[in-house]
Length: 459
Image (cartoon, rainbow, N blue to C red; front, side, top):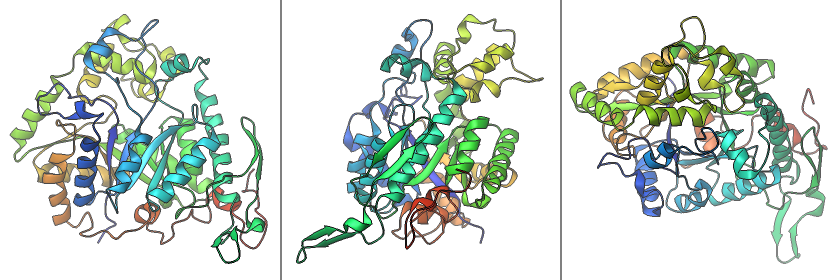
């Protein structure tokens, strides 16, 4: 049997695109029971992890948030997923719990402490999605900071992750936590130390006060398909989220695996997950009707607001019958969703808006009966060399149709496991048999065993 598909379930603590449909439940985003019901269903169905995207951004056009974003619920409003995760950990046992923390907003000791605590609270089921942040122009306004140039954000992210790894891997030796009441020793002082970091963007001399959890370092995810994003993924990530059309996906995955090998890492050790939108019904006609109803909930104004969120560009002010100006690719907010629409066969601005109206940042959806969508999805995995899918919510704002119709078909074909043991998220996704970073990962070099910690190669 081939390796089972990796299945993650995508959400953000905000409104989802089809919230206007009467059956959609994403307007319940501030009700805890909404998330508890959803994550329990995902766990019972055999999903590998539940993922929360997050950012501090919102659409900005001109000098403020456009009315259509507020009126239409476009990338607005959003809550804080880290406030939801502990409750989900308490009602689940096997499913991984992954969230996003931005390297532009959260300082490394903050990320290290939050993730180390969650690693304990989830029994090793937590993951960190490393991003520089979406909606950067709005986030900069919100925090009163200048907008950091795109490539510089990834240089900061590299230094951020390096320091975070030192805190997770370098502060506590294995066995340093004693909790010996008779001897009055909570932890062995010889096994706990301050790390020293003097990087280009962050400096630290301190100790992470949280002892290591089951994974020590959370499972490391990354989302960002620009060239600097792929370089960051190849250096640090253990799983990568990608959203594009098949030719671009194939190129991006091959590039990430090539870069990983250049970094001395196992190219197959990085799991590549495609953003998958599944419109599925008992018949193809049912699925087509569902898709048509969902697409009809968005206007072209909504699409323009969404595009402005991801790129900082206002398409409503551009000639709809001409392609994007190549200079648009120099935007400092986000480049992936600009670069995909440039080139010799570039679409017009109107066609870009229509694409965002139908699919937003995702690639082409899978539409049809359970057999049809699994056939299509399998063909995409085979062509791109991807490992699985990050499944998008359906028209209800949940994953009910995927769970009820697609998962049984996957199980019938042996593409997902029948039963899942209780393990750490890293063991579940990588199949390594170890809850810790792979020995060739740069972070593993910071852990002291019998010798002082050494610097990773190339530092």
